[in-house]
Length: 546
Image (tube, rainbow, N blue to C red):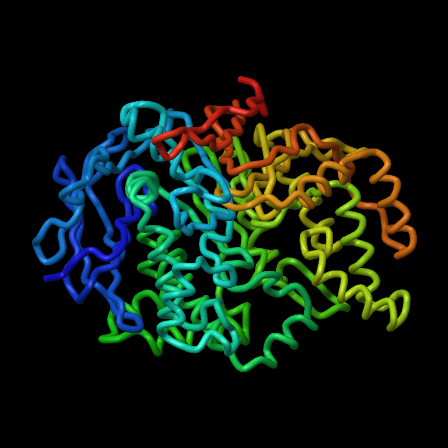
């Protein structure tokens, strides 16, 4: 009899349809049955001995919240028989309702070995506890997870023990994951937490990778890539990372119509075993990044969300470095400017912040010029070492891409059909802040903001706290100018100021968008004895008034 190994995850939801992702223990027919008669079925597909299904659910009614169950070969497997959590539901919106978007990044999912969590309560656990305590209360319409959903290079003690039973950890990559089977272990560890499992079953989610989903500093530079490709373990690690990302995260980001038009999805589903097909796809994505698009668009009424791949789509040659390859940059521009006037709010999800503290920005831009050789070969070698050691790889480290994004955001936010707000949503840097750019010549009509929120569950070293507090200061800004002058860096096309933060801890941000109004709330996870913890409001602000 087939058992439910992982899931269900509620992924895509619109007014009439949804998709539900599951992993089963063996080949079977997966079925979702809703209390109002809506539902759907799908046969599992196989990858590397694992069995998955993405079940399309049709017949939903806009503006309803309906409980659902999952069956494998006719046997009910969800809700779990011993669950104390409320039924999982599929909630659909009407066009007039507010849209609530919760976002964050960087979730190290390992459970504490002795009951004491060294990095504090998990913000997703806390969100789940709040929703479970008040099922009829305010709930997110979507959860945006902006990278580092799993940590392939920072495994837990329990996972390392499991790895040691498979292979000799004295050989590279040691306690990091090495292949597809080991990636499945990471997702199993991350998504089997009871509260998080329930949360992901009842709140739709959109995901995009960042570096730790594959390896720290993934695609930092051409020199970095050449070095890692020279190792014996990298190729298997990368292909397994892309294959598992496609299965566990990417396909759930897509609508049923997009899935039906996706030749890889159709081929993998149709094959008795899709492992070789998916491996070939991942290999093409590695050698020719333009052959695949991990970025995608989701519309929630009059709120447009563009989730942007700022890792795999990079151009790394020093003489033409770009955060986004030309085709990816064109896609982003087309989606942002498509049907202008057709949305009231534009959200651009990119794992790496666009606007950073001024000192950090200037150092990254300075380092990029050094690596390009403007100060000679010796400075270039120094710049490459610094880039890797200090993680200098954000939008500021790709100055032309930084300027291009500034121009696109200004264009999207200008004119008689401008939206009320344009927000860049990011994570990565293990703290939260808000920053607002300004254009001296012609300010856009829309309110444009950088909203950064991380981690969901991870440590925040004292060096990060100190560095980012100091990085926003006036003396640090002057110091940054000296770096920029030494590198001959052009002045950025925008000025910006910090409008909130920095805030530290495990946290989530919520955007509530209704008509042309927009409100922001930052909540931090707080430990409570005898429970998973709760969320306390740290900051609330109005982005766009009614």
